[in-house]
Image (cartoon, rainbow over all chains, first blue to last red; front, side):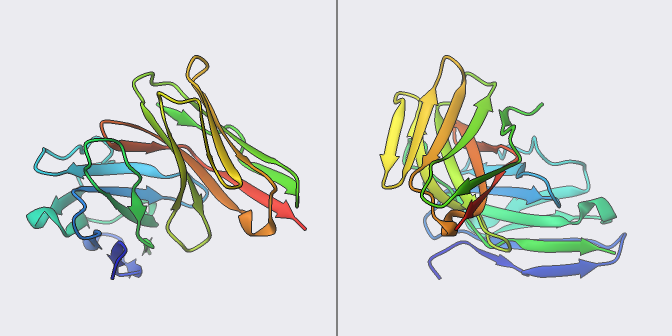
Length: 115
Length: 110
C-alpha cells in the first residue's frame, strides 16, 4: 500500500504481558515517529527515528517502552509488563528527509487495551 | 512542559461562517508549523503548513497565520462546512521532530 500501515489495528492484552506494535512506513521515508493518544488527550510524542542518526527517545514514558527500526524501514514499539495506564491509541507516522521540514503521514493507529 | 498549546478544547460554528482555531508555542527554535485534522478512529491527516520565514499560507478554504513575536499561530477555515467537524491539532517542528498540541474539537452546525 501507499500509506503508513500499522498492525494490529486493535490489541487487548492482560496486565503484565508484553506487547509489540508494528509500523510499516511509506517506502522511501527516512523519518519515523511514534505517538500515543490516551482517551481525551492530545498526541503525546514517544520516539523519533531520522535516518541513521541515534533516535530521539525523550518521549518514552518509562523503561518498559522501547522501539526499534530495522533496516531503516519497519519499526516495532514494544511495551513490557503492560499496565492499565498504557491503554491508548498508538500512532506511527513517517516523512521524507528532503533537507527541509516536511509533513508527516500517519497510519490508522493501534488501539491498545490493557485489562 | 507543554511546548505547544491549544487552549480551546472545543469550538462550535455555524455552516458558512469562519472557524478560527488558535495555537500557542513556547520554543522560539520551532521553525515549521503544521495543522492536522483527525476524524474518530482514523489517523491524523495533514492540512496545511507554514515555515517560520512566512506569516501567512493559504490553501483553498484554509489559511494559516503565524505571528512569531507572539509565538502564536491560527488556522482559519472559511466558509466552514459540516464535513470540517473533527479534531484539529497544531504541531511545531525543529530539526524534524514534531510536537503536537492537545487538539481542538470543531463542530460545524448545518
